[in-house]
Length: 375
Image (cartoon, rainbow, N blue to C red; front, side):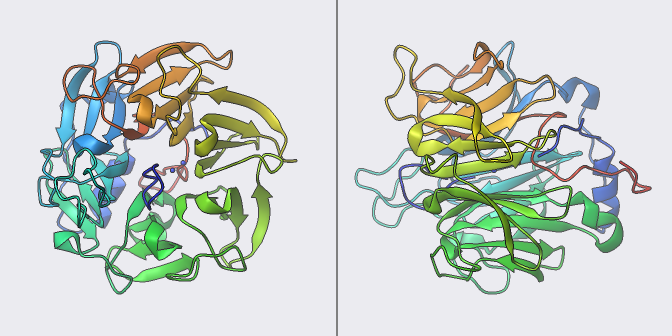
């Protein structure tokens, strides 16, 4: 969710150590794409992957030293083979990285990262790149073209590979196509496999969404959707039925992200209320963390992503505080990338970070499988 209230946002699930072997699976499934390994994959496990929105880049950082160890995106505000504009979401998939080029909307004065106040700086692509930065798969057209037809998107804010489909059907990617008011699953050949939401229709009725911001497939096969402007997270079946709804007792406003935790609770980014909430199966709040109470904080940082880590801590993309923080269940910050409420692109600086994950340890994805299909 680009959170100043235009279409642009993002989203993740179960505590599982990420198996780097899934890169082997992907490489075999995407014909002609060799597996490109990082120099030392074991060293990547504790790095953070951050979608640094207004710097038009994704970076991999060591949160202890704040050093950037890998980057994609040259900062340009036009989409291209080496650029990504207004990135809202990034995830490491084995040796590959999946990116959502959301774009930056028109604004006067222009928003950071975009030089065109009249037309904005669209991207409208989801791309899969290798570790050298080569695009090996893309959904969406070049040139920032927006649409709802074959191989077209309009403000994609989040995407994830669905590994459980790979073994049987090849590459499948779930995409939150925000301005088209839909969640779609597409295959390697760009065919539309599944959709929830009526294309171009904002609403809260059956098969309707309003500015969706994330989607993930749960272990039971259902899809959990952050239905942002309907102020709810919903769990829907593949035959388009809503089976559960979460509103934190009607208190949510601007649901930027939702993920299902291993014990059955649901973690929700309640962006307009500047907090992260965890609710139980009865929609009662059992834990929450505000991101705007620290001295010097932006009054409305509009956090966009919260991911529960295997150690029990929560990684939060605190968007307009220009930082990513790891907090304990006792609400103590133990690691931080970016300076509080200070935008920049130098050492330990971010500009509107929209998404962050710990490489090798993040929720929101269907459990990865090895080549033989086992977890």
